[in-house]
Length: 76
Image (cartoon, rainbow, N blue to C red; front, side):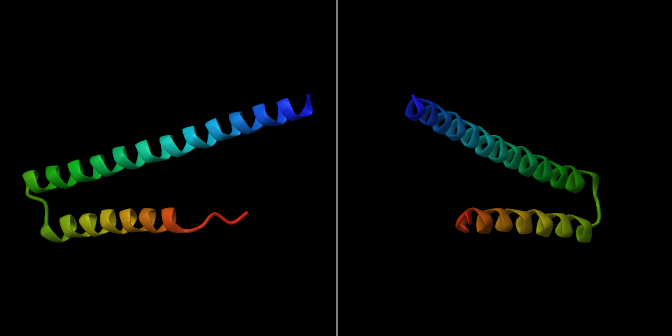
């Protein structure tokens, strides 16, 4: 009986971790899309080029940190 409960707990934990990872990835896509949209609006309205470049650098830095973090092993 204890083995069955342990297996159910493992299954629920795996589903929970999957849903957390999925929501994080969806959030990253939405955030990136909003950032790209903001750059497009800034270009369309004639914002300063320095401001547009700084936003683009910030987005690329965030993306590179996300990629680097996904490659690091999980320490337990």
